[in-house]
Length: 337
Image (tube, rainbow, N blue to C red; front, top):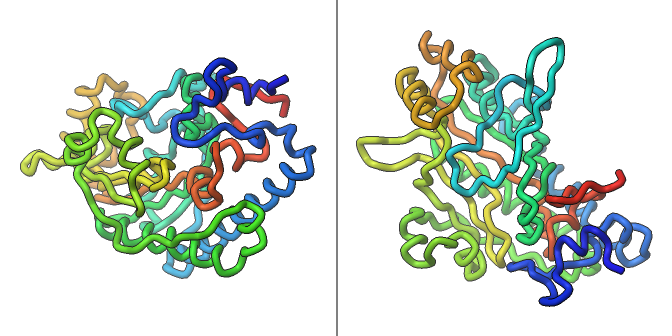
């Protein structure tokens, strides 16, 4: 009999319905009890450990400050009006007589911190996004995951591109050099991408691949690409004179999809207020951000977040992102532990 995870990922009549990668039994935590599944999981965790070691050491060597995350706050990333967002509900609780929300990303907190100091920092930030149940089939989505978040006061898109290209390639080089045994067990050959990654505007890819441009482009890529000018949340900088958004995604090859999202940030009070109202967001949830902007203390910044599970899954060649987590958080499924 199929496990609940397996049943959510596969159709008994049509076989596997995951569009980019096949379903796999190691998406089920019970696979840890199986010798082969356990060995594969350990290999994945070894690769993940090496990637995190390389990336955090590289950031520390470059003078970044390591900040601890928060999980409950009055303000969190609204993930709106991002058309690719698929959150079913926000987790809200009352503490000390006030409503707070589980962190969907520390975007608002990063903007405040970059303005008040330190100006260059990173966070291994847990996110809770209760994804729609049908997203179990994509192979990309989890409802709990971790991002490597970076923010740089007075930074720009090109600076963030270079930083993440270095983190991606150096971690992959190190894994390829040091972890041959785990890679053999995973059946994975490391192909380190060439840098700099090519840059495309969203409109170019839409014209070429249509509505599902991200999936179709990812399937055909041989190297990661940056995709820019994405109409998104109020905090991403929108250059109205040029008619473009100064933001981006990094899309991986081999059908692994988007792994990094980021951009330059809005910092002028009038623009932030205008965009909050345009998007139908509650001003009261962003009062500190607005006060800093009104007082001229909200600094311009740029940054991004890299999905750890997605990137580790790509490096390891997993068939479903659930294989990367010891206790998979697959949309629509609540495991025992």
